[in-house]
Length: 288
Image 1 (cartoon, one colour):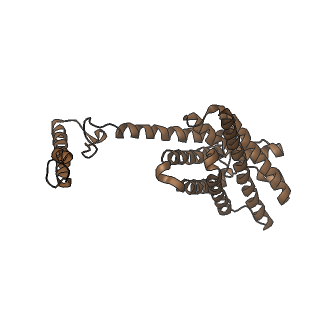
Image 2 (spheres, helix red, strand yellow):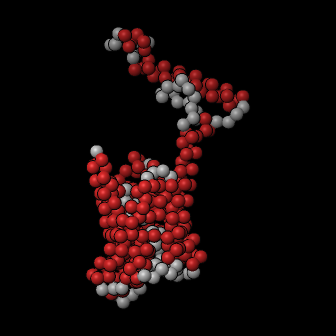
Image 3 (cartoon, helix red, strand yellow):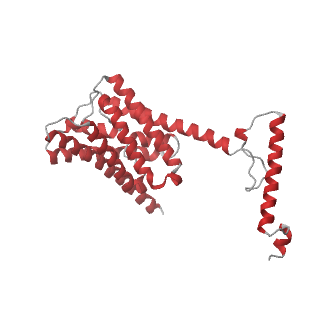
């Protein structure tokens, strides 16, 4: 049993490293492609590449490691109790190693310097910091919603996450370069050994992701508390008016009382229809 747990843990860590490698290598590829065409990196191309890559990653390693591929996402899930804190350092190391490996191999394959992959503030540090916070907040808020509604969302979660990433790159690219991922910025910075303004791309995504996760949990818990309140001794067929939509006052209490009586009457009438007008207890003993 212990061996199986170790194998599962090792598989998830390996999946995170591979997923981050795929993400960074695709980013490296789109940057090189635009440069080979003697042009600047197109924002639409960059956003589409990032979004489509996330879709591929979610569908490929999602069942294995939940496809974080982002230290900020990992920390946010741990903050709300959806991920063990003991695995956080291991995941972050795997994600950083995957980013560094992709940057190094990409520089060899495409013949570019690793510092080309770095993200830098384009409109000042303050603007870059806050746009990274807000964009990561939006992404994590959506991811938390997809996680809690996984049964209803189903296989569309990867597609929705990819669209959100592409949108976030579009709104952050002209300001901060569109990172929203500490591993994405830290890998090239380590290989280039240039850490100017790197704190923005480490701190801002973590702050935004944690804030997004906490806010969604707060809203979700309030909604569950409101929807789970109901009157006792009422069957599923005759559902009462939800308490979260009730108000105080004698008229409201009278309406609620009549509503319950009406619900019981409808339930009894439906039972008589199912038993061809014969009382339900008689039909239960002597079925037709």
